Amino acid sequence: AKEEESARALREVAIKDSEYVSLQQVNVAGLEDVQRFIPDHTTLIEYFIFQEKIVAFVISRHASTAVRMLAAAGHVRTLHARLSFQLDKSLLGREFMSAHSQQVHEATTYYLQALHSILVEPLLPAISTPHIIIVPHSFLHYLPFHALYDGRHYLIDRFEITYAPSATVLRYCMEKEDVEDVAPLVIGVADSD
Image 1 (cartoon, one colour):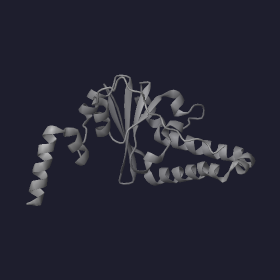
Image 2: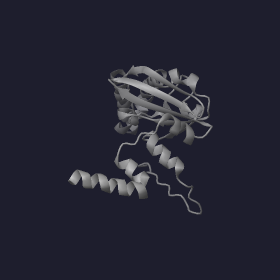
Image 3: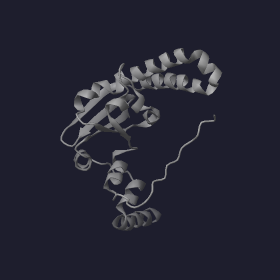
Image 4: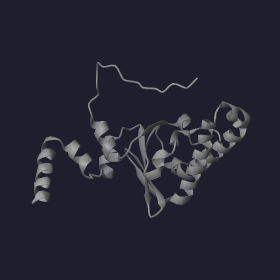
């Protein structure tokens, strides 16, 4: 009885606010849906981890491709842990960083390049737009995709980059009306210096 009441309530709310209901229940955006709402100058890259393998979907307005075995998730998880270890060294203070900045920079660059070669490089032939939207999955949400390095350029130097938690949430964001005549709220965290 309670399940039926809950289902009825969700149906009633769905009529009034489909966006709210879709965020309460899984409502996956399909390929045609995604191609309809992303702009012409944009490519969406959605990563997904399935059976410990990283899969990527590259979707633009007029084309789509799937890379079924981009990498083993365990290998990327290890690279991410090692990159995080290097980045965390900055917390050891100015004195440590002054003494070891070259080694930290080289190691960080190495891991950024390794992650780029695995997660981005195989997808580049399918990207022909200046803007990419990255939709990570699982621990990939913690990767700084914009900082991945090809040996000459960071990804942010090649593309305008946006992140989204899912294609479905992105769809609702893209469908929202622009807010006009208001000042943006910008929040920053100052250095301790």
